[in-house]
Image (cartoon, rainbow, N blue to C red; front, side, top):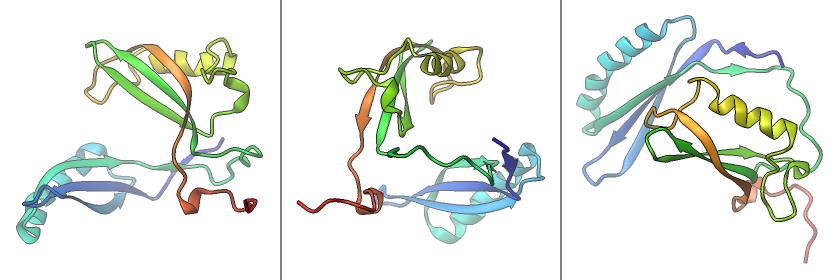
Length: 167
């Protein structure tokens, strides 16, 4: 893997109208900008957006995006809608969920559970709970995995395999 930063980061504003309907506005920024500058500029732009839209700015997020221009080919038969769902206990007593798209059949047991004894699965789970690199949505530390199993997401027309047998 040879990830490199893309030339532009992504700044996203979450807006809500009087009916409670959510909207999103996306703008990009040079990836050379420091996060503190991006945040200062984003906060300065928020009231200006609100002034011309009539909606309330409910939240702001920004990210620096990286991409691998020469990524490896996906494995034959892999499907993003076939997921490995990992449920985690947080330090504050709540829980969190991480779904890994295209979970390999070789790490799924016959009852649908993810094989926690598999070395790749163990390495993934250990990396999530080690230190404080990852957290729940509320910032609470991830303590341990509580469940791991195969899950399917309903396919949309665009996600179905290109070659399907007619019934």
